[in-house]
Image (cartoon, rainbow, N blue to C red):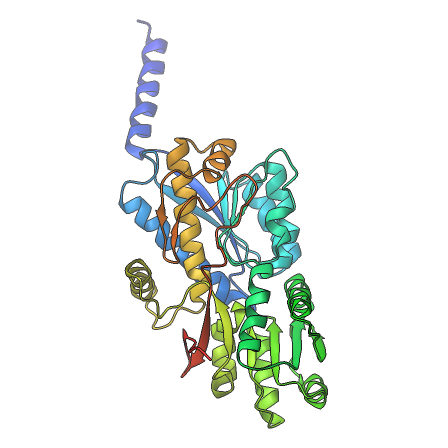
Length: 385
């Protein structure tokens, strides 16, 4: 054998050895989340739940003999930054799927990038109904959700208000896609009960003076306020109602459980009620194990957004089950497996039995959500009226 051939052989053997030492190539999962800004309690909690699931899977041997690796991008709750984050994950991330999407407006702006790239997406927080239905008529819909969609939440909010005896209801919502869709859902749900809101207020993100809208709502005889907004603005509603000496109940979507509502509103948050897919005060063994793992891993006493954390965690478990069943990370194979999961998947929120079909990409059904109530700064199961 010539000297050149022997050199080439040695290099080839060295490269093979290096590959063996490096171990299997990781399966890369993208995470798009609002890790900064007003939605960060949701985004960070979701990201942490995702991390916990990945660490558990890797500790048990990974998937298909390969470890999972997360590639994270912060969209800061901005649609423009969300599109950039999605483009980076598609172009540079070399990811096989994406888990995340917190704000509905950001998700609506970002998802065309993922659909065009044919990447399965597990939406773990954003709730606008259109997100899983936008591409329902396409050859293949790559959008799945592990969160309670707004058209599921709104009727529950109205039912909770009516069961408490309130009939004159005001609606306070922000001007984002999330707030707009949620408010429209509340109006529809009220209409189904033969009612109309006595007052509607809409406000921009960053609005901190709600006194004018609250005074107007009180003048109509509103008995309770139904909300669709996020933590900082919700805290402004609660605090300004207190300044007006108006003890008005707040009943709303799950975002009333955000830490930046509870902390910023303080005692004015007490008694607020909201739809929840998951409570930190859970009594299921798997849910309790998840909570304890989260608190221990991140050294906190309270999960900033338990719903977001649990939904992120469960979304990874469902995605992993699909990859395992498919025996592949090929997008079409993963989507086909998600639409026909043969084995139950025990998550923090529930045990999922065929959660998705080709015509239904929503994992959370009406039987899952409950109503939470703020007591002494904690979210606890609401007492029956």
